[in-house]
Image (cartoon, rainbow, N blue to C red):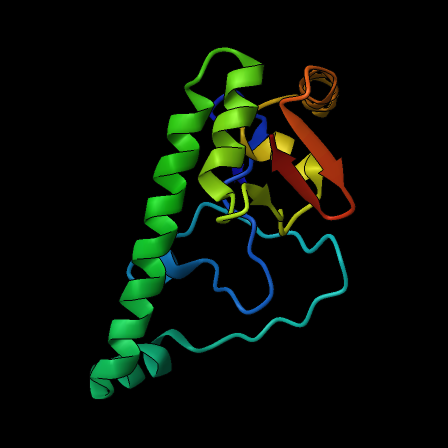
Length: 149
C-alpha cells in the first residue's frame, strides 16, 4: 500500500506465495510503501548488502531476478491500462482477457474483492457488473474461476 497525496491509500501490488515485494528498497534509501498480510504468512527478509553481493556474484540469479521484475512491470502496465478504461463492464472484461488461460478461464490468485480494488472499482460495482455479465451470458462464474463465453 502507498499513501496518496490526498491522504488515502492505494494498492500498489498484491504479492502471492513465493513472490517478492519492496524490491525498490534495494536501490533507494527511502521506501514509501507499507505491506499488510491479510492471511497467515511467512515472510523471509534479506539484508540489502547480502542480497546485492549475492546477485553480483551469481549472474544466473541476477538474470532470474531481472526476469521477475520485467514480468511485474509488464503486469503493472497492463493493470494501469485497464484502470484507464472508463466503463466498469469493459474494465472487468479487459482484466479477465488479460489473465485468462487458453480455455478462456481466469483463475484469480486473490479474492474478487481484491481484484475489484486492483482494477480501481468499488467491490459493490465490481460484483454488480459481474452479475450483469453473467445475466447477459458473457461469462460464467464457478468456484475459483471465471470463464468467458
